[in-house]
Structure formats: structure tokens, C-alpha cells
Length: 520
Image 1 (spheres, rainbow, N blue to C red):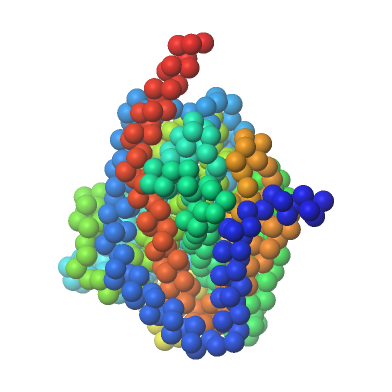
Image 2: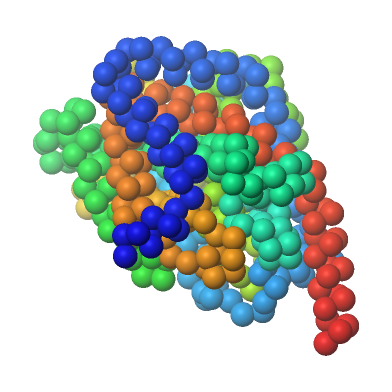
């Protein structure tokens, strides 16, 4: 049985990706300061050289995706079948929970407050508190809205996979996105580019998952100290990550149809419950008025906001960070989405990912972060002072400074910590599963549908948690952000062919589908 499992593994991909992760872990254990300096240098180089390219990619992914969705090509079905594997609610739960994990609680609470306390350079200075709230949310919407979801939802990447995998019968691997450039050479036994492409995408999605896992460790550490009196520090945060890691590893080992699906639905249920609680018992009038005002302002300013590059220092830790984070997710997230989206139309996918999901996310940011802004305006210092504590940018403390002011504050705070954990668990299990799938050979249709071996899923799940712990030890949020940005560099190059070829792919799929239909 072990021999059969090993035969399924794409060893070059596994060695490159797994080897780099193991070397990173070893480097962190042997010489923390040297690793910290190396990461800082690479981070600075990455944002300086690739930041402008990331702006172009996220904008064009959205624009071309909208064209495909509302053209005649939007009717094309993924996988050349009308049979869907999951019901709409189940499908939406899995993709949204997986994608929302990093920003679902941690950043939804903290980012609007951060931009309120320290206004973004794009907006003119003002003393009007309500206008400051609009500006803060409008900037937050850029980082969690339409452009981000077009990349995060892997719209053009999914189009590329839909054509190359189901019409050209190529492997469901990130390297396939480079097929227009390198052709069949990508799949040769002596190929170097193919394994490097796959390995780079695995590292990037690991970074994108490791980041939220690390953010969660900080959030749980702060919450356990604030609510239950534990001593917050590296040991507590590492322990919290360890517990969460065990849960998502166990979930990933059961596959998509069991643990991943069940936890995603649980996550959605808890999110809806807390969403409704805040609406009913929080500052409802402020939330709705601010959402309408900030959303309208965002739509009016979206072109200028999306192309504002006059403050590269500020963008490095905000806009560039977000662009890099979700660009890094795209190739493997596309694999996860195409595995759970067979039978759905491109229009259904793109509208859900690029319009519906962003609006839901922006509303969630307003409900959670906007509630914090309301409390701050009514009681100056109650939120911002916490945010500015501990040397400034106390992101973990921001969430609890909001939830503790709600009715049943202690219980709601505990439930929000639980929600933070379930968001990360759903991403950890989904990405452990998807990374494992990429490290397998999948040339045949049967291989494309195979379940990755449990041992492989466990290995990647443990690797994600272990690196998150090391990065926390290196420097908390900054180290996590640096790791995410650095690993996105090679992936951003892999995302260029899907951008260039998306329209020709849908035209070819439409032509083939029509020819097949006429023959029948």
C-alpha cells in the first residue's frame, strides 16, 4: 500500500516544495537573525520590482473576467457537464470559507480601525469623524472587494484550467497555466520548469495559508489572556496554533466530502449567527448608513484608488501585501475551485466570485469593523487606544475591543475567537488537501479525480502549522507579511499567460461545445 502511494507522488515537485520548506524550518531553528535579515531584504526587493505589475494583474483579471461573464461565453460549463457535485449552498460555503479565512475576522475588525486611526495617504486630511469612517472603509473595500476577489476566486485561472484540463486533457497542475509558452516540454520527465512552477505555487499558497494561521495564533493568544487570564506570549500562541493544526489535519485527512464540507457549513452558520446578532444588538443605523456611504464612495473612487501609486512606502504594507497575498493563492485556489465547481457555468463562477462575494465581504467588514468605528466615534479612545497599544498596530486586540462592548460581550468575544479558528481550519484543511493533490501525478482523468494519500495531507498540514510558528518567533505580523509577499513573486509571472489567453480559451471552448452539440 505504501509503495502504491509513493508511485502516485510527483517526486520532483514534492522534493522542490517540501525540501524548501524543510530547509526554511532548519534555517529558522539554526540562525533566526540571519533568516530575519534575508527575508527583510527579499521583501523590499519584491515590492519595489513587482508591486506595479501586481496592480496591473488585479485590474485586468477583473475587467476580462467581467467581459467573459456577461458575454455569450458565460454559458460555458466547467468540466463539460451539467451535473454538479455539490448543492449551491454547499459550494458557496466551501469556496467562501476557504477564501475568507485570512480576512474574515482578523483584518475585518482591524483594518477599518487602522485606516481610521492612521488615514491612508490617498484621502485628503479631515477632522470629520464620519468622513474618516467612510474613507477607512472605502480603503478597506479596495483590499477585500471586487479586484481582490477576481484574483482570490481565480476567475481567469479557472477558465484556463477549464480549457486546458477538460478540452486539451492536460494535467490539473499549476504548470499547465504555462502551456501556451512551453507546450509539452512542461510534462517531460526531464522538465525543470514544470516542477519549479508547481513548487513555486505550492510555496505561495502555503505562505498565504501560513499567514492566517499565524494571525490566528496572535488573536487566540491575546484573547486567551484578555478573557481567561492566560499569559500571552510565544508559547501560548504556538500552543494555540498546534491545536488548530491538529483539527485541520484531521479534517483534511477525511477529504472534501466529509470534514472540509462539514466544517465549511459550520463556519457559515456561525458567521451568519454573529452577523445577525451585531445587526440586531449593535449600531444598526450607523452600520447601514456607513455601508451605503462608504460603498458609494468606493464605487466612485475605485479607478483612482486602484491605480494610486504615489505612496509606495504605505502601499508596501497594505496594498502590495494584499495583492501579493491573493495572487499567490490563485493557481492552487483555481485547482480547488475547479474540483468543486464541475457543472457550473463560467458566469455563475465569475459573478459569484467577482461581484456577490465581494459585496458580502464589504458588508461583513462594515458590520464588524464599522461597529468598532461607531464605538470609537461615540467613545473616543475605546477602540483606537487599544489599537495603538503595545507599540502600535495592536491588530489582535482590536477585535476584542469591539466585541466586548456588545451585549453579552464575554460570550460574543469567545464566539468570535471560535469563528476565527473555524475560518482558519477551513482554509488549512482545503489547502492541505489541494497542495497534496498538486504533488501527485494526474495525467489521466482517473488520476485527476483521485484523493491524495492521507499521509501526504498530514505532512503538508503539519508543515503549514510549523512554519507559522517559526514566523511568529521571527517577528509576528511583519514576518508573516514578508513571507507572503516574497513567495508571490514567481507566481505572479505564472498568472500572465491565463490573462493573455483567457478570451481565446473561452472562444475555443464555445466553438467545441457548439460542434459537439450539432453532432449530437
